Image (cartoon, rainbow, N blue to C red; front, side, top):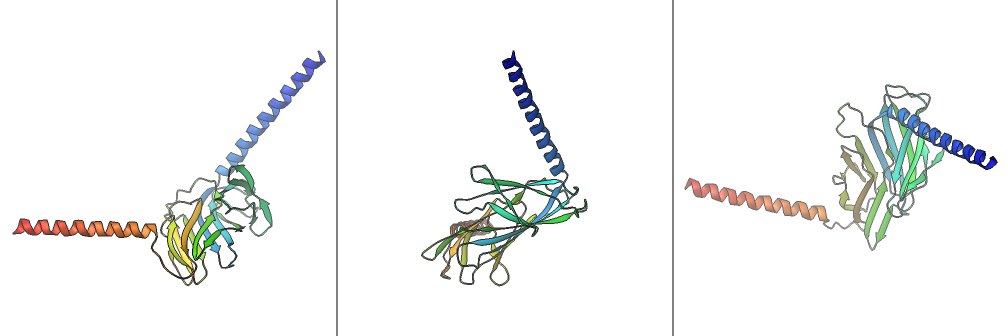
Length: 240
């Protein structure tokens, strides 16, 4: 009899815990859904010359209320990852392993946040962002993504990044494509969506060498030029 009562109590406790977990997850999702992401700005500094990158992410959110939970996550790439970040300069929080290389955390909208919008800033350091070998380099910059629906205000470039590089570096190819020289030693890119990583190849000795995207563009240009020449000759033969 006592064993039966004990088993019943255990089952009841497990059921209550499951209900609380489901209710808590639903409440967090409901709170987060009130906020929407308007834009994301990334600034990365790779000038430390030790293979690291200091990254600052600035997000502009709107539509929610103070104290609501905001889920964030970061997908690490090989050794390019981190386990903590600084939120609005208030101190570090831990990015917990979610699955595989995925890290996740939850931040709270500050008491000063209004439904008209507020800015959220995260800063973190990737210790091994750069792999260099005999002048060649590969850079991986994981992006901390805010897991919120995008606002419906028609923003074209929801993601903009500015990457500060050492003066001697040259970039040969990037993913996503579109990384271009900006002012001084900075490179910039604007995208319609927020990527999980910015990745590019280059040289540390200042020598430029063509990358795969350049070769693709060159082949495409040559193909179009040849097609245009054939079309022009065909039109001339018809006119004659």
